Every structure is written in C-alpha cells, then in structure tokens.
Image (cartoon, rainbow, N blue to C red; front, side, top):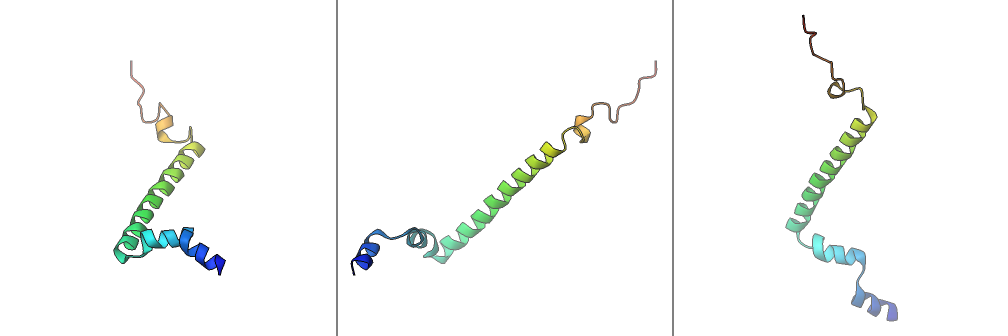
Length: 73
C-alpha cells in the first residue's frame, strides 16, 4: 500500500516521458520525425569523419600534383 501511494506521487522516468511526449499523437509524431532527422545527421557526420580519418593521403584532395600538367619551358 505504501509503495503504490509513493509511486503515484513521484512518478518514474517512463511516466514522465509519457506525460511529456507520448500523450498527444501530434507531439509524438513530431518527436519521432525530429529524432530520425537528428539521428541521421549524427550518423552521417560520424561516418564522414571516420572515412576521412581512414583515407588521409589517399584522396584526390591530398595529392597536390594530381591533374596538373608539366610546364613546357
């Protein structure tokens, strides 16, 4: 009995999330879409940085003489 009265007073993490995010469908859908967008951006940034770190010196931007013609003098 004491446990149930105490739990109603405090609430838990999931109950708080439910009250803030999932109670209304429009807020929940907006949260999911925004989360998917931000998650995609974070993964894209991380993969891009990892790719650049692993390919230093192998990219066209890193080779200064690539595409330049010798001057005929």
